[in-house]
Length: 115
Image (cartoon, rainbow, N blue to C red):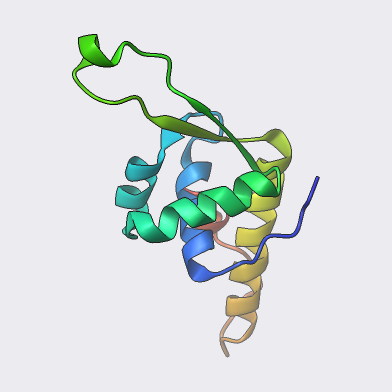
């Protein structure tokens, strides 16, 4: 597993959205809408996460004619990716908290666990 992922604020936002329901399958547009980022930023992040084995993806199995839309690429956190994502969010929160003069050192589960 290629564990190293460049951790940007945008990557953290994508991870936070995926962690809301780690076992759920999400399509890129939904992730973009939920984290408030343009799809042009989200899809490269999803590609990097997939290359690092933090997520997997597969095409939705639908009849496009019957559904009246194109099929979507669905992304899902792997068990290891879930652990890495939680650790990355927690580490970032601790770094940000430790620079604050009144920091308690207790991470907020809201940020670390995605709600």
